[in-house]
Amino acid sequence: MADVGCGPGHVTARLRDAGLDAFGIDLSPVMIDVARREHPGLRFEVGSMTDLPLGDASVAGVAAFWSLIHVPGEALAGVLGQFRRVLRPGGPLLVGFHACGGPGSSSPLRRSDSVDAQGRSTRPDRIRPAAGSSCTSQASRN
Image (cartoon, rainbow, N blue to C red; front, side, top):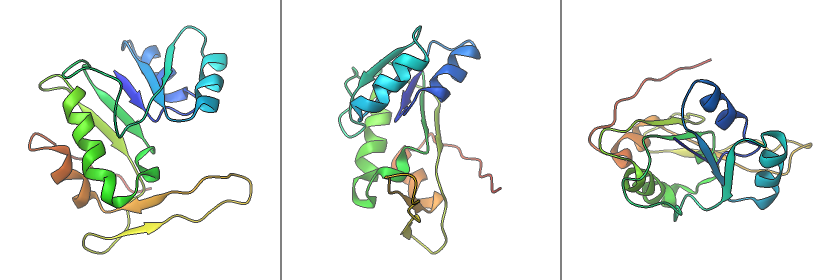
């Protein structure tokens, strides 16, 4: 199970604790260093979700928890295409993201004074077509 955009590795660790053979990939070498330090028994590597360093049909599942918020709208289909490429047939794709309203819209998220990060929300109906025909979804609003 590839945790794409794993950040500090806490989701990767949860996946492993649930019995999955999980590993993490993140664009930031700093985040990978943190993940390796915090979870020394797990595999983490630097890589981009726009060009995943994995073979075709090489992973049983892909998780992307709030990493898609950093992907510009015009790159979203390509990223989800990378997820489809590396997934084995029938493998699950689990994504979490901030949803916004309006047909086909996306909007910037507010910046925090304490965190140097930017993100964007998107409509769930923009994810499904790019994720592929076998995509099923469940929306949760908190």
